[in-house]
Length: 190
Length: 172
Image 1 (cartoon, chains in turn yellow, purple):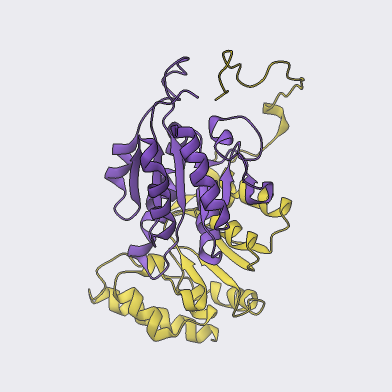
Image 2 (cartoon, chains in turn cyan, red):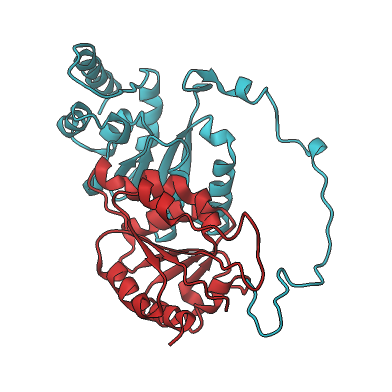
């Protein structure tokens, strides 16, 4: 699909919503996302998995789900969780919660693209998934869609512009002497 | 046969079906549940970081592409609270959101308070609370040894996910 195709599709959805024919929340993309996503999806193969967010229309269309099917799901109130097993496309409206699912799919040999926002990329769940994927050499790409917002909240303001620095951390090392749990005689540990 | 032995035999049954056992203290001794995996080959155990919600999401993802069973183990039901997000909003709800049908056997335990009482964070039974939140995952509270094998056989054969709570009060 071209950028124009994507934008035309969402304009149609916007009209349907404004007319009151979609009785569920709809989160539309911004035209400025189209070209960037088209470039990313040039590397996404049909057999790859794509895990998306509550704003997944462009992802779904670029993964190859037919526009009429995407629209059918949106009209049915499923804009926030468009999915298609046939196209290996899965969405969720829970922020950051697709990260471990991406790791699970990739652990079994799938090639996975997992889209998240910039707030999701700033929380511990993201660090966990990236570290796990790195350690297990998983074929997964985490794509951060950065609009500097978490819904309507400026992401960095929510963190008070804080960084992860060593100035707040103290660590010491020791060697454990006793086991984690000392069982009573004749008993297993916890 | 005692409860613990019954659970061990059920785990060996699942292992013969190719199950992958995922959790903390599944490959390293550190929890009672480790001993219930006696005889399960090491290559069918995956030790993961202490990230309960990650663990369940990971297992869910695995289950979408893996044909063999996935058993996600939480040594205490208190710890399962931390996986409630994936358990409720994903594993239980995906079938209401589209055509994906992930299947995971979630296994947890209500720890006894004897001979040692581990206190308010380690011995709770939240079975009813989880049952009230789950409408697609089957919740089973296991209290008798004679029910163990049939419960896990049903969990294996069923198309739906299961939450099995081992709560026999066994201190061993």
